[in-house]
Length: 104
Image 1 (tube, rainbow, N blue to C red):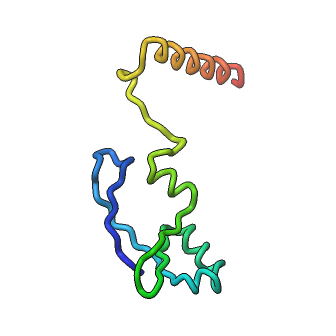
Image 2 (cartoon, one colour):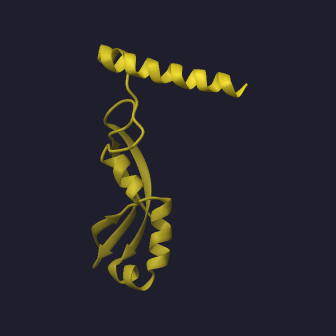
């Protein structure tokens, strides 16, 4: 297992360092033990090495999207929305509230 410090783009304070413990496999392992390597990738990033040198990192698509700042989950401050966006959001929330009232 390798320890690596990563800057997390989606952290509340940009640039916060986070320690990540990574499994490590060789390129040969990737061919011979692909199931084990994939299972390790579901738990976190996996180092892939060649001749003892780190060459690749295997991530799930979700991990990559989060790292690249492309998460489907976004948070916005209401103050940062335009008047039109605020009205659209409030109308949508009102519609949900009205729909919830019908279920009672």
